[in-house]
Image 1 (cartoon, rainbow, N blue to C red):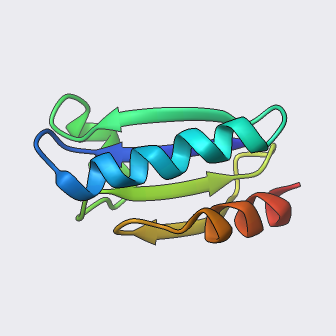
Image 2: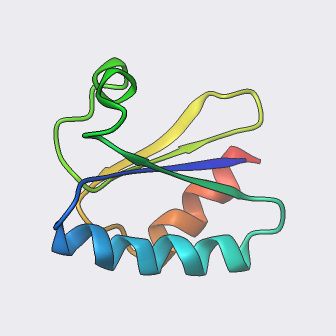
Length: 86
């Protein structure tokens, strides 16, 4: 399972979401968290339709998106999405 986390520099909500994603990675065996800076990887962000940071996308093993949250997700939201991705 892949947890993609789109961020931007000097984004206070991104720092808060990073804490949630770090805890989710600790609790979900085998989860891979990838942080993507939208300024550095603008093409990828645009291809994914990222318009707001932070944005979190949870993907299953096949790469299908099962959850997307803009703003700071709760840990519970990420964990429920991860369960759907399995």
